Amino acid sequence: MSYLRLFYRLNIFIVLLILFLLISLSIDLTVRNQHKKRRLFLKNAGIFRDITCRIYKINVLIDNTLIHKLDKNYLILSNHLSYLDIIALMYNNKNVFVSTTEVRDSFLIGKLAQYGGSVFIDRKNKNGIKEEIEMIKDLLHNGFNVVIFPEGTTSNGECVLPFKSSFLELAFLVDTLIVPCCIKYTKVNDEPVNEKNRDLLYYYGDMEFFSHFFTFLKNVKSVFIEVKFLKPEDPKNFKDRKELSKYIHSKIEKCYKS
Image (tube, rainbow, N blue to C red; front, side, top):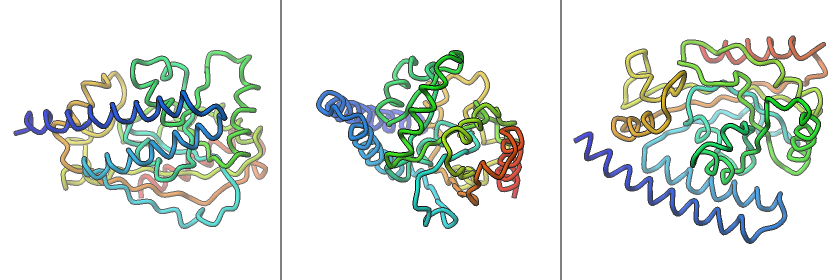
């Protein structure tokens, strides 16, 4: 039965993938204005995100009561557990993800990230930091929120990994509010997520993407994800990025373990 499920769900995914890429390609080829193109990318990705969630029973509960009245755009800092985090945080058409050039250059994944509206930074090129800061400023000033995973990688869910404080430097340089965000996976196949079943969802370490994804399609019947946005913080209230990084990490970790 699980292999029949895999065949059925994989075929649906391939159809959705082809449609998504074709529509995205048409946007890419016909729209010249970069901000308009990104908005259309995000809108298209949001449509396919909603379809995907319904078909694969990915249930996302969003708690944004502390930020829904913010009248300007902001920097979202979130813990990171899985590629499903992207789906969880694509609940509107404004959140732009910051990824790396390594992801951009990856087979298929890079194109999906690009057509999902992501921007890319080269962590090895220190000379490009000024351009990257201006890019993020430009996004914030043109109606987008910017999402960063400051752990720099995914974890196995046991804890929130230490943040790379260099990511927090952006908050000082772009002069915007930081919104901490906590992602929790609460149920898989109607059972609480635990050490025995967490690897069906969490993608970390040396796991191979396509192998993990096929396992997900084969074995996961439903997922419940909670996304909680915490009180916004102004970087100006902290003396440096390390203090800010430690504080934001503690807030997210406390929420994650609660």
